[in-house]
Image (tube, rainbow, N blue to C red):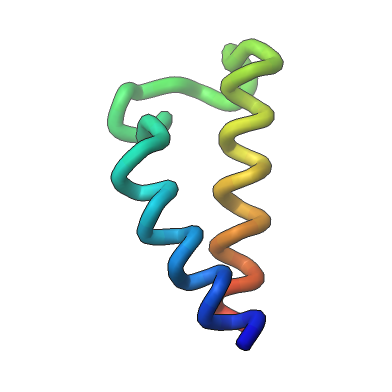
Length: 50
């Protein structure tokens, strides 16, 4: 059940949130908001794959 929720969240994130790597944003140069988006996407992806 939990895995299905995270997979659905991952699909929603892919369509709504910007891809920072495609924009060429380096983590060292990212602002706090971009780091927050990156961390959230990483957390969702990690839980969807477990």
